[in-house]
Image (cartoon, rainbow, N blue to C red):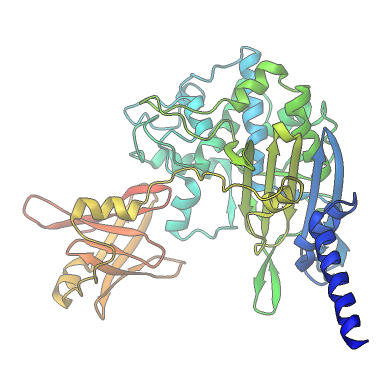
Length: 477
């Protein structure tokens, strides 16, 4: 009997495992989605909302975790979240609608609408702002270098002042793709000046109202409270701290929405209620560089592949919020995930789509230049070779005060134990280790290159990191 029981139990376990792997029952996808979001369903932590639409219908909409830890309010499909860069799609559609109305052209120079922007010696078009091919430095990165707190206050005038001080671009407009939030803030200003309405009012009247997105809005005053919104959180030891945007610029971000409303927006790509067929076609057309190369980015939409099918997606991340949207037209499937914790992974929408599509192919990432490799190639150094330890007298030569006119920022350099220290007011020091005689790098791959005149005297240095290249600091005398 023991032998027979073992055989029966083995057969039952095998059958159960096979049945579980087939995911045949109609309720099975919902259970699989529950398992993806299980870490947020404890009832004690911030979490996420998810919405899945198939064939134009919102089939699945659920909330996991707590929207506000101070009140215990739970996340539901109707909870508004700050959606960060998902906001860019509404900015892009606003520009498209104004182009269709003859109020502007995508090939207009941005300085036609924002003359405060420097000329830079080359015109930048609205189309290049939309496709992130303008060469404009990213204002978030500029502010981070200056020591500005990532969730600190920022007005539109402060943004324009920062852009006005810039003296150069990362590259010639149209030569490369490099994501820059600056372009979409400028587009919001273009909407305001071309339409006579703020982006907030224009999008509300021309996009959100026609689509019935009653819980979606741009917030251009950080003091305003969005009813029922999820607070954003970052981990702080064994607990969490609130981390929400306090700036008043919009366009690159600034919108709040729900998974229910964003499902309606995704459906608009099928119905073309807003924008019409021509407007939707403009939204989906990939950008082209000056050399004719097509980039996998349309108007605020990344173009990729999942399960062998074309996908359109975008993600957002700021403070304690993480958001993602994924649409796969040939499968008539769209997924929206909104989270109020900075620990949420960026792949949640893809994971949910896998439940309905099977194992996904890796979506091709949009190419971002490896700036460290670029600089090292020009210096003959290797990132794998041991960094030479700078002599104390060499570091002493670099010690002193420096000023960036573009950031309106004074900093100081000093040497200590073979390390170059960059000291900023009201921000932590940055430590640089040498890669060569005049080239240094930090732990986050910021590059500092020393500038010298014809007599080899030190005149300043430049900083290059992520979405900002060759930011110049001159030596104070």
